[in-house]
Amino acid sequence: MAPVQRRYSKEEFARRGDALYESEVRPNLKPEDEGKFVAIDIETGAYEIEADELAACDRLRSRIPDAQIWLMRVGSPYLHRFGGRELRGES
View 1 (spheres, rainbow, N blue to C red):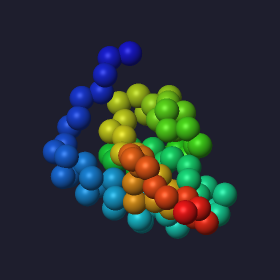
View 2 (view 1 turned 135 degrees about the horizontal axis):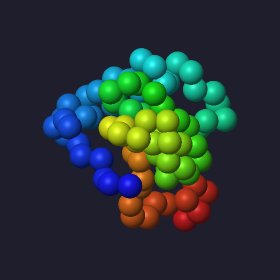
View 3 (view 1 turned 30 degrees about the vertical axis):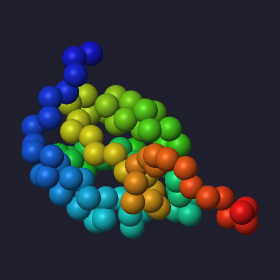
View 4 (view 1 turned 135 degrees about the vertical axis):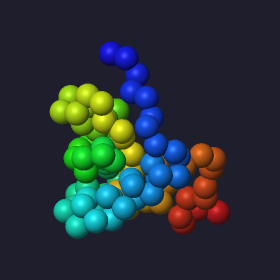
C-alpha cells in the first residue's frame, strides 16, 4: 500500500484533529477507554479506539484507505512520554 500524502499544514492538521476529538469523540468515551488510542480521520470525522495505536490506525484505514489520521491518547495530553519519572510512594 502506498503511503498517504498529507494534504494539510501541520497547524491545520492539529487544529482539525483537536476540534474533532473535543466535539465528536470525547463525548462518546467511556471510563474503560482511558489510556487507549484514538485514530481520527480529520476529513470525515470517522474514528477508531484501540489499546494499540497501530491497530487503531489499521482499523480506520481499512474503512477509509486515504484517511488523514490524527492520533490522540484518551485522558492524556501526550501521545507518548519520553524520559523517566518518579514513581509515587518511592523515594
